[in-house]
Each structure stands twice: as structure tokens, then as C-alpha cells.
Length: 378
Ligand SMILES: NC(=O)C1=CN([C@@H]2O[C@H](COP(=O)(O)OP(=O)(O)OC[C@H]3O[C@@H](n4cnc5c(N)ncnc54)[C@H](O)[C@@H]3O)[C@@H](O)[C@H]2O)C=CC1
Ligand SMILES: O=C(O)C1=NCCCC1
Image (tube, rainbow, N blue to C red; front, side):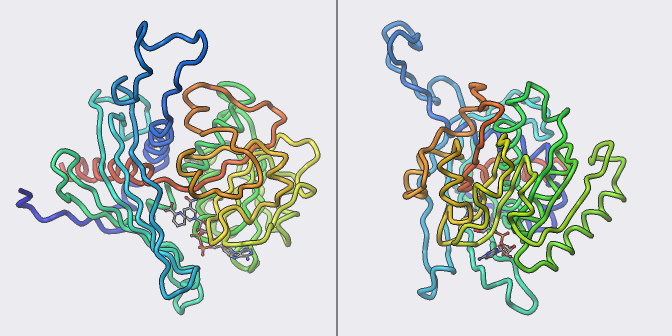
């Protein structure tokens, strides 16, 4: 019996320990764990002579149980949603410092459930509230007892941005070579400067060598404010994470203008109608798009003609069967499979990471946050 009350970790505690190496490692672990082992075909080698293909669990690899999320519509208004997102992630390893491998060499398992609301009209309140509000329940994976309740709004933003970073690393940079993400400069466009767009812009600059950052927001003043904040922060932190040259940051009057010279596009809005079209992209493709928006329409913000030209990758194929019905292009694969097998797109490819957001990402990041907070207490 759980005689101890569950611990509550508030937003301030969570924010204190969030950092990119830790979150990127946890998200990469989740993206790999969802990949199902392939059944052997033809004369490919079996796991053991004459045996059936083994599950991730029996191979000692990480694995995930992650049912499709449950969506409740509030007040008969499809823009007011409550989502429950449970996940079990088994047998995965984290260092907690993003170094790769596991310092303690102990496999972890995490049982968690995120409860998240998406009320986009919150931005119109005075004062405005975030559109997305989340909390994460962490359970004891052996007994099922609730051990912790963690503020999950920042984790949601960070893990979503991190999924875009990981997708950009493997779907864009790695087509140019094994260390291209450390060597190549890129132009980044951010379309939509809300909570997601703001962190995408900052994180792209903190994790990669960004030559030029173009910003578009429907209400331009928000893009201008973001540009000013980023310029100030980068000038202040110029010795730390932003590399030898600070990016040139420009605010654009249209989404098309913002993406015209971009190598990497991050689009995160509630738009139901396309904001960017194939004719907006530069002629020589070699472009990667992180399509993050997930309002009532999951893939409305990017036009059909871009999808039809693209290789579309997802975070989780199984969830895509429920959530991406009507996607105007076939799905090329999962990001985790590309990480595991190194089957990178061609240099000239136009790729889309269609980000749905996974409960397993929340679970792995919440576990890493809890570990970091517990080690701060020691
Ligand atoms: N893929 C994932 O894992 C996640 C996706 N999301 C999605 O990301 C999107 C952005 O979320 P937040 O930044 O938290 O919201 P936010 O409310 O902070 O920002 C919304 C942004 O969308 C823009 N926008 C809304 N309607 C528009 C329209 N018709 N045309 C052009 N721009 C429009 C607003 O100007 C604003 O920049 C939402 O669709 C949300 O559901 C959020 C969390 C996780
Ligand atoms: O993955 C999430 O968390 C969300 N995805 C879509 C919109 C609400 C939150």
C-alpha cells in the first residue's frame, strides 16, 4: 500500500531543471522505443534459427504501450479539448545529461499519464492564459501506485520542440553527413509565434548553427516582440550556446515570405487553412518542415501540394492510423526508425515531420525531470 502522499512538482521546479541535452535524450529514447521490430522477410536472418520474430521486450530493447489518446470536447466547442495521454515505456536508458548511454547502466521503465487541455481562446483572456495546460501523473511501474503529480505545460512545449529538433537532426542534417548538425549553417523559418513557435525559434538557435531566422505571426507585433527578445537574449548569452555568429533575425509580412529561403521550417499554429504552399518554397528543395499544429484539423496549415511532394515522417505509426486519417500523402516512416537504422532521406528531398505528440515523450521527459529534481535534493 502506498502510505506516502504523492509528491507535487510545480512548474517552477520543473523549469529549474529543464535543459536541451536532457530533454533531447529523453525524447530520442521515446521516439526509438515506439519502433516495432520488423518481422523477418525472405532470407533476412531470424533472431535465432527457426524462431519467431521477437518483441522489443524479449530482445531486451526498449518498448512502448501507448494507446491512442482519448479526446473529450468541452462545452460542445471543438476548440476546447481535454486529452488523456497514458503511456508505459519499458526498458529504456537515460543518462539524464544527454551524454548517450546510461551512466548507471540500469534500464528504466516509466508508467505515466498526461492530462492536457487545449483551449485556444485562452489567448484572448485578460490577462491571456496559455492555450495548452497540462499535468503529468507518474506511477510506480511495479505497484501501480501514484507517486508524483508534475506540472506538465512546460514539459509539453519542451518535448514537442525537442521532437522537432531530433527530427531536424536525423531527417535534415544527417543527409549531409554524420556530424552535419555541428558543421552546417541553416536558415530557419518559424510560422506562428505562440508558445510553440517561441520555443522552436529559441531552441533551433541554441541547438544548431542558424545563419538566418525568419519569423511570421498573424498578429505581427508578437513576431516583432519575439525577434527583440531573442536578439537581447542571444547578445547576452553570446559566449554560451549560440555559436560563433549570432543569427540574422527578420520579421516577415507573410508566411510565404518567411519560408522563401528556409532550409528548415517550423510551423505551429491553429490554422485550418494552408499558410504555406509549394510555390513558396525555394526551387532547389532540400527542405525540412516540422509540422506541429494540431487544432481541429491536424494537418491543415501546410498545403496539399507540399504534402504530395514530400516524404512524410511521423513520431508514431500506430497513432497516425487514428489521428492522421485523410493525410494527403502516404507516410514514409517513423523518425525513430530513421534514428535506429540510419536510412536518411536524399540530400534534395522535401521532408515533413508530422508531429502528433506522444505520451511516451511526456513520460520519458517527466522521468528525467524527476531524477534531476531528486538529485538536486541530495
Ligand atoms: N504536435 C504536438 O505535439 C503539439 C502540438 N501543439 C499544437 O501547436 C499549435 C500551437 O500551440 P501553442 O503555440 O501552444 O498555441 P498558442 O495559442 O500559444 O499559439 C497559437 C499560434 O497560432 C496562430 N494562429 C492561430 N490561428 C491561426 C490562423 N488561422 N492563421 C494563422 N495563424 C494562426 C496564432 O497567431 C499563434 O501564433 C496548436 O495547434 C497546438 O494544438 C501543441 C502542443 C503539442
Ligand atoms: O501532444 C500533446 O500534448 C498535444 N497535442 C495536440 C494538442 C494538444 C496537446
